[in-house]
Image (cartoon, rainbow, N blue to C red; front, top):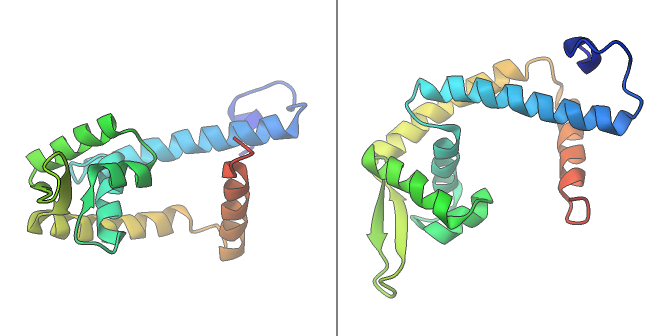
Length: 155
């Protein structure tokens, strides 16, 4: 459905780039709501899942809070709260850095590893369901355009 129809606008957008930007924002908002609904079944948030995926796919046994914050593009204060909540639920643990006691390494617990694997399987199915009408070529084009938008000079 066109954004003009969805928003019940009486006339078309005059600026295609403005319409494209609003489409991106509207779609992101709807996807975020759907993600919230999906992840609530597993008693995690999308941000917590993203943190767990960063740990899983880092290729390392553990990461520092700073490394996680950098990979998720958030500030350290936000990471602290996320880790606190994941630690309370027993999904991750903090391990002191023996070389620098001011730092902690974040790692999975066995429960955390099992949980992220379970959620990831269901998440992959949800993504495939959601994207079922999008061809690989169309997905590649979306990726290309989004990457172009995120280029340092663009934002």
